[in-house]
Image 1 (cartoon, rainbow, N blue to C red):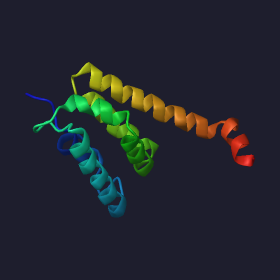
Image 2: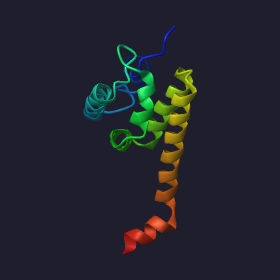
Image 3: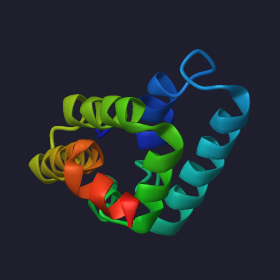
Image 4: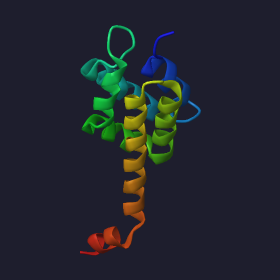
Length: 117
């Protein structure tokens, strides 16, 4: 069996009306459709390894900002569980680490000092 399709087999399991309000869900679906077209990571006529490029892009950062930390990490964890390709798994793990790093920075005094001035 081939690789799962990111939008149809992974994102659609995580991003549902029960996990997001309908407005944000529509926005997320629009962003993901644009990303699939731009990065061509679909399993149907594209290359799933292009997810690596997507996870490192400002487009993915925009998705994370819309989804929030917890749902973004859940999506990336599903990627890790669903793809056998070690490079895709490593890119997803790196994205999780980066999200955790931003969360740690948000909680630090460094950001508080920055906000004061």
